[in-house]
Amino acid sequence: MTIYDTERLVSSNFRGDTEGYTVSRAIYRTTDSQLRGAKPRDKEYLIPDGGNLYLRVRPDKSKSWIFIYKTGGKQRRMGLGSYPDVSLEIARKNATNARALIKGQKIDPIDKARKEKQQQLENRASEIPRTVVELFATWKTDKLAQWKDEGKRVTAYFERDVLPVIGHMHPDEVRRRHIFTIRDNMRKRTRTVTRLSNQVLSWVRQMYKLGLVREFCEIDPTSGIEKEDFGGHEHERIRALEPSEVELLFERLPKSKLSKTAQLAIWLQIATTTRIGELTKWEHVSFEKQTLFIPKDNRKGSFRRPAKDHTVFLSSFAVSQLRQLMKLTGQTPFLFPHKWHPEAHAPVNSVRRQLKSEPIELPNGHWTPHDLRRTGSTLMLSLGVRREVADGCLSHIDPVKVRRTYQHYDYQKEMRSAWEMLGDLLVSLEKGQPILAT
Image (tube, rainbow, N blue to C red):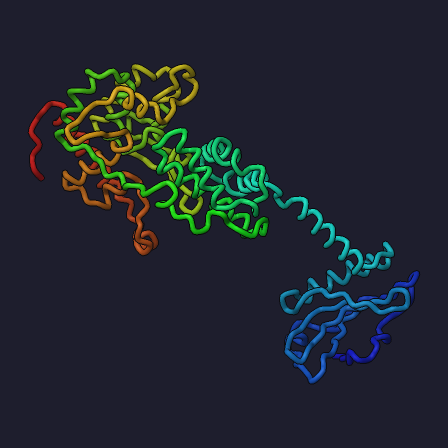
């Protein structure tokens, strides 16, 4: 293996001259094992591989590739990366490309690389967001597009509350006072925006996180703002209807002004422990198998914990509610079609809106459709259903990582029994029959 001292001009390896550029033929001389075994010396030295390609070995044990050629009578050295990160095969390929530029196109490869790098920097400069509107557009493309609704809800609130305040500003010009102005404007519209304003704060923070990571901005104006100081403390919702309240609901719902479909939606949410937005198309209902399939696209999830398909086993009570509903909406694709546009699903907050305008009073106070899944799950627990089975009926992700990793039993048999027990309890409450203690 030939070795050259870098203090000497490496001229013996050059052959011929083509309009000022000098390169040699590629006659490979080394192997990976030789290069890996090359030991450092007091001074750096070069190991020629052929065709102007050399491995430079330095006293600090580092090794790197260089491509040496002459242009205008001067020697030039082009770095091709460190070894072994850049393998012998890749280094030879890169050297071949450089020789082709020199011989075929009469182009200096170092100059070409510098021009390409400069062009990349110019392109990057043109891509850097100059306003919050542009930063939001980048965040929307990179992150929100992966969300379940492709960020439509977030976009709506940004366009209404965020961008009118800071959209025209450079991302680094925004200060905490501007973020609080967003909240103050939201409160002027309605005072009860605790959770929503905290959500907006979280979304702005996520947008700026992308800006910092990608070096689009140097500050995060939401840093140091706590949710309790912004939107206020969010009280955990724990309301669940007691069995006696469910019995009263059977009595009061038919007398209320709620539509028949809204009444059926309430019972289906309790009986199936699902959200109203998950009860979508009739094609997902099987009366023969007594199942309701909920595709992952209809379920809540996140980028880190994406939603999964979920199957609900229908109790006799749930089946009876669905058959009543089919008489009303079975001619459409949806269980709950839009009132004016049957080809679309009804808004997920339609039942909540009806209850808000025509509340149904119960002994333990105000309740909303958000409490109905919790009610169904709580009733299951009161019947002696194991907590992990009730969680499975809700399709909750196990919070304990060890169990998620090593315990994959799906509790399908137990879940079927839990839904049936819940259905039997609802039938008993509907008939006003006493509940036997478990």
